Image (cartoon, rainbow, N blue to C red; front, side, top):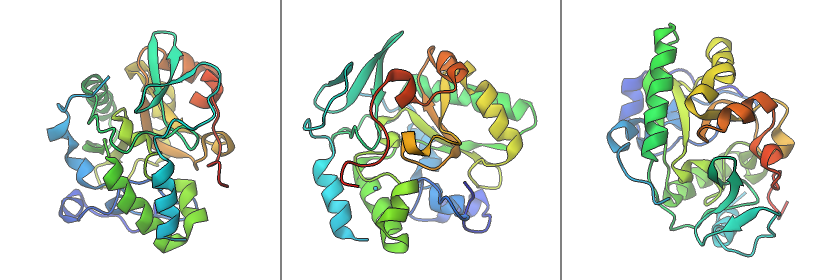
Length: 259
């Protein structure tokens, strides 16, 4: 997916108010200034510990549903009161998609282990000459997502917004395990070189490229080459399989149940 606005420098990004770090648009360019919010300063909040997306009506409906245990569970999926998870090969794997929401009050911050792995990945890319910034977009609270999603709904309509931005309570960023990579020009990483590198090497650091080409019907979102989800050791097996998390672990994906 391409960015929609012109490129901005990181200095400009730093001056912008809270308007971004939602998924980018499928059909045009949206600058990282729209994608990168206070999350670009998450390096300073990376030590926060982890506890273990028409109209305002549309956003409100999504908000009221998020995080409630009235979701039809797939075999192997459990709910602990704040989030849903599946049992991975090496432990619990938190899941968040258009079928499995997070509780509005689930506010873990960034997972320290995931942040440490992200810094290693960024350093490795920089060492190979890729213009990747030390800045990134990480944890995003439910409240932050409410405003971001509504802005996109107001701008493009709910149907379009749902393809690239999560409704509040359904964003992987709320897990504290998801990060958007940014290049040194302040844009989300979309260039072929670094995108291919991530597909090939992200798993070495415990990450999977969450939304890949050809998986929109399964994941519910357009491709995002910059969007990394931390899994840990099992990431390599997932990457080697070529499957999305939904396919690999066998839980429901796709669109929202009200679609």
